Amino acid sequence: MASLNIKDPEVHRMAHELATRRHTTATGAVRDALREALQREQRSREGMVERLRQIGRRSAARPEPFLTDDDLYDEHGLPR
Image 1 (cartoon, rainbow, N blue to C red):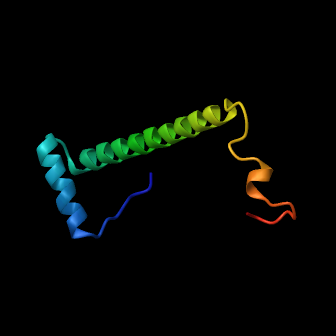
Image 2: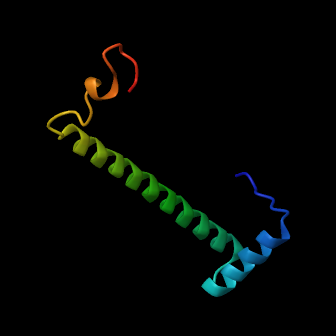
């Protein structure tokens, strides 16, 4: 198993503070904090995927294009 050597005193302080508040070890506090962060990240990604799917469903359900080529381009094919 690989070890993790953290040299930042602030990280050590926060790990020990969290460990004290949660009545666990610094390793346990870091493990739990990382697990929680990974779970939040996963939920955030899943939420984004669902929001994009909803946009796709709404767009596909439109009966006709919002703007037609005639709305966007003149008789010479140039943008209006």
